[in-house]
Image (tube, rainbow, N blue to C red):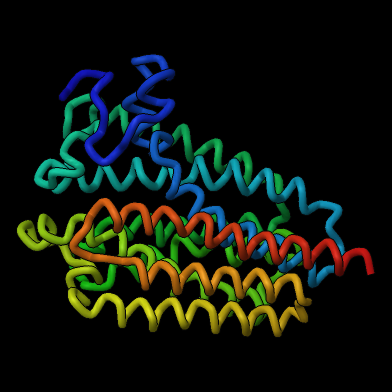
Amino acid sequence: MSGAGSRVADATGNWVDTHAPPWSRPYLRLSRLDRPIGSWLLLMPCWWSAALAAGVAHDISRLPLIIVLFFIGAFVMRGAGCTWNDITDRDLDAKVERTRSRPIPAGQVSVPQAFAFLVFQALIGLVVLLQFNRFAVLTGIASLIIVAVYPFMKRITWWPQIVLGLAFSWGALMGFAVTLSRLDATALVLYAGSIAWVIGYDTIYAHQDAEDDALIGIKSTALLFGARTHQALMVFYGLAVALIGVALMLAGAGVAAWLGLAAFAAHLVWQIWRLEISDPALCLRIFKSNRDAGLLLFAGLFVDAVIRAAV
């Protein structure tokens, strides 16, 4: 279990296991590059806001570059956040079946090595951030406070998913900060809608660990809602769709954006219908499918931005 080639329990076969140099595998696992779904979910609000802000500006000239920079930034900063999470949770991870083989509790990486890797990833993120305007740089730096406190929330509140939502939805602000050098009502409502979406999908994710979490005293909305999870998801997913819809109205979005939102909403309805909280493997599959839901919305927003820029 402690060797550099050991596979993390909650990962399946991937390029890290099969192609990465053995010395690099523990670090790639720390940054979750063997399981990039979290990076995609962090990226989705960034892309939504970039496309929606470009539509507001009627200018897509910088949108391709912003999309690429957000992609790089989301992956490295999610990696940094996961590394920080694994440092703070190393003792708890050792007690949970799904996480006990993560690099730090498994002895593949020491805490000082993990800290050094965290700094390395953060520096790459800083280089990406410095490509933007001063307001966007300050907005991005402000998110670090939420990222820093998130790992401790599961110890003190049944609602750590709210704090995760605040962190993972920050990109909904960044697109407006980068493109328009301001945060307005549209950005804030999009941010609120994304937070509701994150609370929903991370509740599904947390059901994988519900039994272990209950035994070791970790709190989550999965434990809080329990058998009422489907009803809770109706509330939070419904809020997500409604708030994002308000953001589209405020932005003066066109038909393509609304079609993207409709596809996004249909996907969320399918998730609720399909979910069985007693099936951890199904919970993981449905959680991962949120990348597809996010891409459906982004596609609509992107097409809308292209159409509005051409008018």
